[in-house]
Length: 249
Image (cartoon, rainbow, N blue to C red; front, side, top):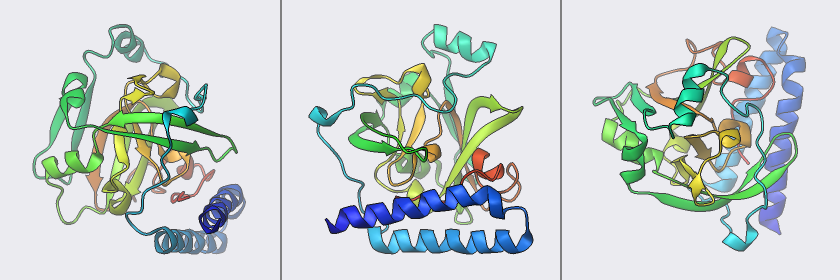
């Protein structure tokens, strides 16, 4: 019961921050208050949940009959349609930025890595949830292979989809990047991720709300700060003032 209350409180904080974001972003004072509240949310969540505590995991009997697609349901480009048609045989994931050994992986290489499978609940900021089984390598394994440099503080996820003529992206700090449940998923319920759910790759960051789980993943970049990426807010929707950057639940 205590855990349910804690999760409810944190989800409420996240939803409150998301809903208020666009209203306060217009003034310097409002933005300062918003930034302070977001830092408090992050600190409170990390204190209550612990830095490495796992999100709840479920059994296959708990799987939702349909895992809803949300946001972008495809990538509106000839290149993506071609990749989709050939089973993403030419899709590559780039790992770079502030790393000593940048590299890239094909889908076949990603499938050959050590895999983690987890059945978790996806909580959308819009109010719906679904339980799915996700499989893929842990992000920490790829970051260790790339040898992230000490000055890196954030991991940025680059995506194939373009909205409002801007490339979609998201980001997390190093705590969430190295969390054991942060994986680069390529399977949903034992099958390749459907187009509507982000094929062929999407991030799973299980202790954060669904908009942090970037779809159509093309690159992972280690950076020192977020100021020069997009509008400097750490994510596509965050740049538009719709949601706060930290969405812990």
